Amino acid sequence: MLKHYPIESVLPRVLGLPNWLAFWRFFSRSVYPLDGRAISLNHLEHDLLRPQFKEPRIHFALVCASGSYPILRNEAYWPDIVEAQLETDAHRFIHNPAKVRYDSEAGVLYCSKIFKWYREDFLRVAPSVTNYIGTYLNLSPSPSAPIEVRHLPYDWSLNRQPG
Image 1: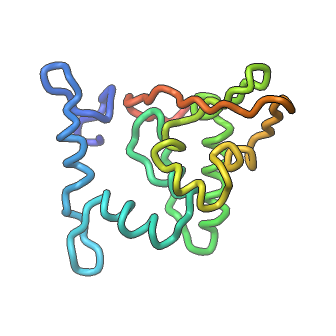
Image 2: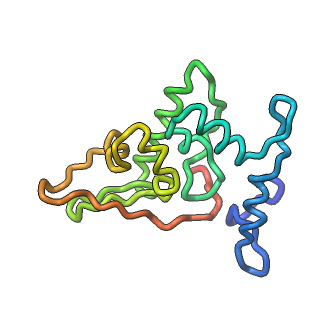
């Protein structure tokens, strides 16, 4: 990102179309050293961190720099305060109406596709995605109708810090 900044999207474009292969290859290349071996960013996230910690808030910490993902924290995660950092990240993401919002009149919860793609991670700690989000937002459904979940369109533009 820094090498080519300013850019409009995290997806490279070839002939005006997103180049998904180049994007996927960036996250799948085993070039990052860890314990004397090279690993990929995908391996770090999906094979090491998610299985080891079983912590859904990790999805508010690990970001691919797209507009639909959380804002990148401007500090490192530290063992003695990581719980508070993850909680702050989850709260900030779920309280951002561009990522999650609830239409109480219609009984519709609009949320990021992160909750769809990593549904199983959120279900480890809550009976449903709606319940998980409800721990952060006041969701007051009509007594006669359940909350409908709709996923927001995904924004691949570059995630820029506000301000």
